[in-house]
Image (cartoon, rainbow, N blue to C red; front, top):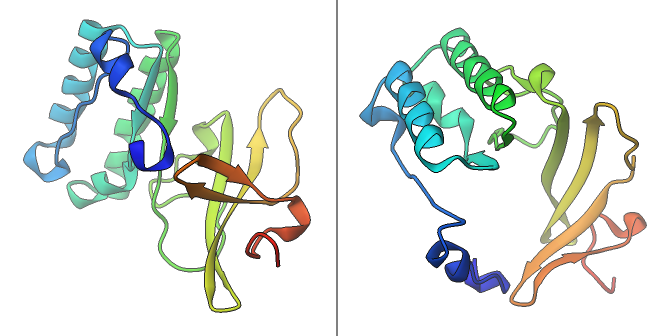
Length: 163
């Protein structure tokens, strides 16, 4: 995160930010679920990020992973914890669903895409849905620089800044 101008170390040192990394194949789905419950109980977070949920498909069927993620989502909502899940979707087609089939369970769904234009790759972002709140329907371009996160105007999404 330092490479894009974010120094997380002060929050880590204050105990306000912690990381837990584990390989999906190291444990079964139930053990991952139990581990998440334990970590939530111990740390009492206000936000949990699971990146990416699609890695769980390496150890379980689509229906088993969806059932596990449904249980995680229900638990975090019950505890009043905000959850942010990422999902890697192969291919160039935009999708409103995921390989884990959990988009219907999410309150807000943001789609980030990588496109090519003029032999360059460009990142775009759009809100597909956000229950109970107004949101933009624009597709916006963005970049990650050593000065942080940068936005491009909606009409330049998919194009390099200044082109």
